[in-house]
Each structure stands twice: as structure tokens, then as C-alpha cells.
Amino acid sequence: MKNPINGLNKVFDNRVRLGVMSVLMVNEEVSFNDLKQMLEVTDGNLATHLVNLEDNGYIKVHKGFVGRKTNTTYAVTKAGEKAFSDHVAALENMIKGVK
Amino acid sequence: MDHDDFARTLQYKVLFMSNQNQSETLREISDIKRIMERSSRFISLSGLSGIAAGLCALAGAYFANNILRSYYSDFNHNGYSDENFSELRARLLIVAAIVLASALIVAFIFTWRRAKQNHLPIWDLTARKLMWNVLVPLIAGGLFILAMLRSSEWRFVAPACLIFYGLALVNGSKYTLTEIRYLGYIEIILGLINTQFAGYGLYFWAAGFGLLHIVYGAMMWVKYEKGQ
Image 1 (cartoon, rainbow over the protein chains, first blue to last red):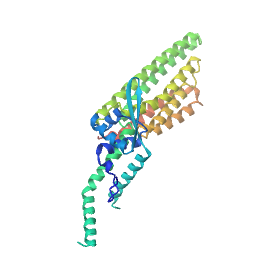
Image 2: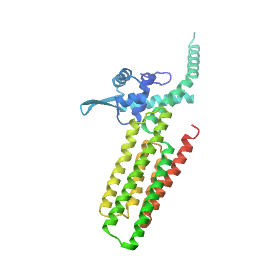
Image 3: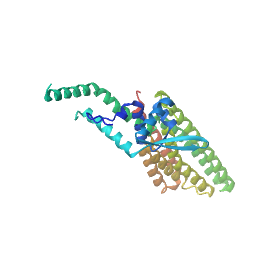
Image 4: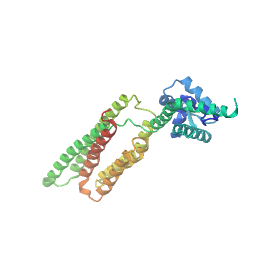
């Protein structure tokens, strides 16, 4: 997954996936609709990227109900937290010119 | 191509790429920071909301003061009666309700305006979190104060208003501008001092809800909104 040259994580080259991770890092649990509003993306686009992040084990999905409506919430996993922190550290290193 | 040449070319490529990507990387980091900030704090709270709410509180304190004064001047002729006292209580409660409603409305208007100017939603995840965290201590405090009034315990009404409001601000500060935490601390301290000066509740109340809001609102406006 990691790019050997600079330590960047391929999963996070996408703006939406990076955005989802940024939101989930600072919020315990966020619903699909809140993510959509926060990142200003379409349903389909967001859903695709969420599946990708889930497949990579970076986020976990919780399907619940509010009344009769389904309410799906997302939270970051330990692995996701680590991968994201590593990615941000790699970005910062690139800026500092360490790498 | 020998091994050294290959290594040099690779290094050159990496350097070139990172130069080219430098600005993109910077943008990516600032995007991450922006999204984290924006998804965890309600940043549209306007300083003007504080000023407007403070003015409402001062106007309310002025009317309450007049009501109290006329109550005490009647006292000289008729003495205290339960009827007079319950009328006083009803009048003060009406003034309080009007002050609360008008302060909330004007505060909402300025914050709504700021959110619109910055193209941010007024009601989102952060607004809900802020609202919930402010409302828990505030509603508990409100019910507590009503219970005190019901048993005619008026001496600690103003201190309780200040203390519970301060606690609500400290609690909510995690979800909005962090500076609001200091406003909360000052309100709490003011409320606690007020417990020792029972007869001066209205003055403490006017200072805490009027003056402090105006000072805080003006400071926040200068810091974040002036010239925006």
C-alpha cells in the first residue's frame, strides 16, 4: 500500500477519501449524511470511497435505525488512525524536505 | 547505465517530483487541517451575536430594576403581601422570558448571517454538537432556578444563572471558538462572588450577561470578523 519512495499511502491520494478520514479522525462517529454535507460530494461518489476505506480496514461501519429510517454511521479503526497519521507525517516530511 | 548513474537519476527524479508537488502537498495538508477544524467546531458564531445579546440583557436589567424599584416603593405604604410578591415574580419572569427570546433571536441572526457569508451551513454536525453540549447544563440550570423561585428562594437566582451559564459555555467551548471558555470561567467566578452579595443579584446579572457579552463579542469581532 505504501509508496516506498516517500511513505505516502495510495489509499489517501483521493480527495474524498482523505476528507472522510480527516472528518473521522476528529469525530467519534459520523453519519453518511453529515459526511456528505461536510465534504460536499454526491451520494454515489461518497459511497464508493467509503466502501474502499472499509475494504482497507481503515473505517468501520455501524448500521442503525433512527425510527424506521436507516442511519449508517462511520468511525475510524485503529489501523485507519495509524495509516492516516503515517500519511500526514509523510506529507509533513515532504514539506520539511527531510525525505 | 551503471549503478551510480541510476541512483543519481532516481534521486534527481524524486527531487524534481517533490519540488513540483511541494505546493500540492502544502495544499493537501491545509485541506486536512481545514476539514478537521470545520468538522469539529462550529466556527460561524459571530461576535456581533454576543454584542446584541449583551444589549438585550442590559435593557432587560433596566426594566427589571424599574419593576423592583416600584415594588419596593409600594412596600412603604402597604407592606409585603403574598399577592404583591407573586405579581412581582410574574412580572420579572415575563421580562426574563422576553430578554431570553430576544437575545436568542438577535444572536441567531448575526451568526446565521456570518455562516451565509462564509458559505457554511448553519445547521450541521458541529452546530448540533455545540447545541447539545450547551443545552444540557443550561436546561438543568433553568429547571433548578424555576424550582428555587417556586419555593420563593430568590437570593441565589442570579448566581445560579451566572454559574450554570458559565458551565454551559465551558462545556460548549470544545465545539466552537475556544475563547468562549474564558467567558465561561469569568461567568462562573462572577456567579460565585455574587453568592456573597445577595442583594446585588441584578447588578451581577447585568455585568455577566450584559457587559461581559458586549466585551467578549467586540473582542471576537475584532479578532475574526473585522475587515473580512
